[in-house]
Structure formats: C-alpha cells, structure tokens
Length: 104
Picture 1 (cartoon, rainbow, N blue to C red):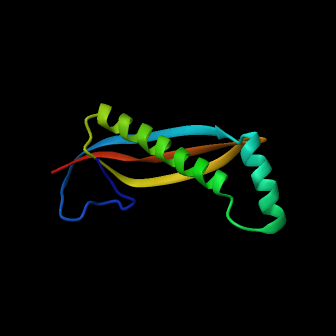
Picture 2 (cartoon, one colour; picture 1 turned 30 degrees about the vertical axis):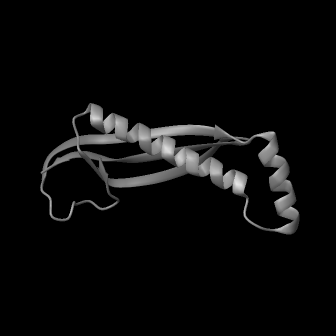
C-alpha cells in the first residue's frame, strides 16, 4: 500500500476514488511511564516511555486505516494525515485518515 501526504501520486494515474479511510486507537498512560515522566520533568530530557507509546499508537492507527483501504479495493492512500487528542485524563487518541484510491 502506497501512503502519501500529497494529493497526487507522482508518475501514476489515479483511476478511481474509493473514499475516506481512517484508523484510530486510544492509548492510556501506565504507572511506570508516569513515574519516569515525573523524574524527567525535574531533570529534563526526552520522555522515552511516552515517545514509545505514541510511536505504537501511530503504527496501530495507520495499520487500521490501511486495512480499511484494502477492504475497499484501494492500492494507495493519498492526503494522509495524523491527528491526536486527549480524550480523558491520562488517555490520548491517535487518528490516521486519508483518501483511498486505485492507481495504475
């Protein structure tokens, strides 16, 4: 599956628009990450626990978006975007969305 943030696929022709596809996940912080983050707030530095959590969330959201596009018969996704938001104390949602297309 080709995934692009652009609205075209260089060197390819979009022959069919399948429609909007999206994937999302909601991830929660855990006590280990919270303790480590508290120490990082005191001394500074990268919060690797949260970084790892966000990397995993992006991978899951993109994977779910790709699954939806494949089920529609698409072979590419254009205009892909990522969005995150806090949905509750200690929980964040990651959403991937774009337009499923068929290219040749």
